[in-house]
Image 1 (cartoon, rainbow, N blue to C red):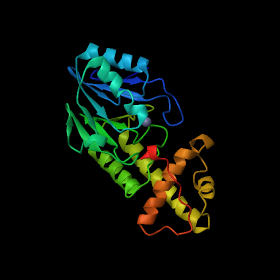
Image 2 (cartoon, protein in one colour):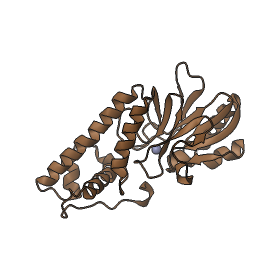
Image 3 (cartoon, rainbow, N blue to C red):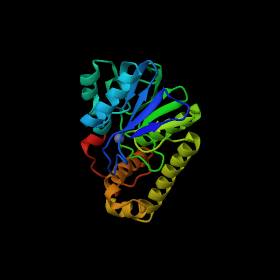
Image 4 (cartoon, rainbow, N blue to C red):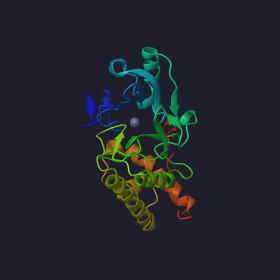
Length: 257
Ligand SMILES: [Zn+2]
């Protein structure tokens, strides 16, 4: 399906048909530009989706490049499919060393780690393509590791202070009031941390106990994702010297980070 932005013919979203617990209604691929066309997050390996994106790019202008918010397969697996259909172009991605301020056409790389270490965003005028950093109606998972959650919270704050008019995420709907939504998510994370500290304080130390007490609003099928975020919270508390030894730490699958 197509996601149009009123008054902005230079940006179009095409949603891939890969719905799921973590991909919501499917991955959003964003086509950006009027003459030199960039594709943000080509999406999963689905020929039909790659065809639709390639057709739209060709109709709009010259294929100039691919911008990848992060390397997870639901965003990046279609990169070869697009290159095959439209010819070689530069791929700007955090995992290949893109850094804050770097250009991808007239878009600017914005540092936005947390969902995974190589996660970045792209600013196009007052619209920011935010990948899996923040969604309109649900939370993303934050990957564990040194400084991950703290870095995520700081980066969200910086994104808010930049004052974008619109956030175009990798899944779900456009975020029309970025400041309010970012504040809500920051509050949500801090609230989760407060409840986690409280749960640990009254003696809950196993992963199962902590999840059932602190992530009590999360349906079963999202518990694996909640476990990843729990690990990020525990890493943060550990770094801050606030984590008792007795607390069980989750083992995280490799694809997450
Ligand atoms: Zn994703």
